[in-house]
Length: 171
Image (cartoon, rainbow, N blue to C red; front, side):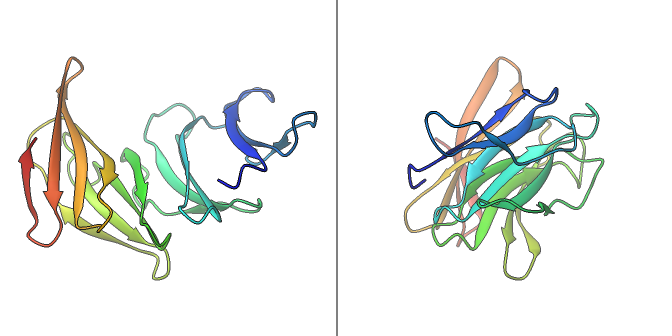
């Protein structure tokens, strides 16, 4: 986020891990070493944290982790290893992250907010219709989430969820 380095996913060591490049002519520093595929990554809005999703030996049940942008040990925030989780945006104050998970029902995804200070995931809304849900954005007031719903691989809808009323509707 500050433009001084880039963090990326690459298989230079034989698996899709996180790497950091601090200068245009330098050699990247490896950030993750466990050999599992990194699926997504994002920076917190203040640039201090990286979130990423990775699976376990190809099971495609992506788990979400938080890692300091300076490096160190990653902290797992998802709680159900048999469930798939998709990253959403960070809160504007970098105190939490939005995500979806099929932990409650393997056929559909619910929307969550993870509070980093209290290390707790709050369920925002549930869904019963079979398909994949992914949070794609949040408005500036952080009172409306935008998410996609894909009942099939060839059909995708954009929805919004009002957080105060917990009502959602198709855009």
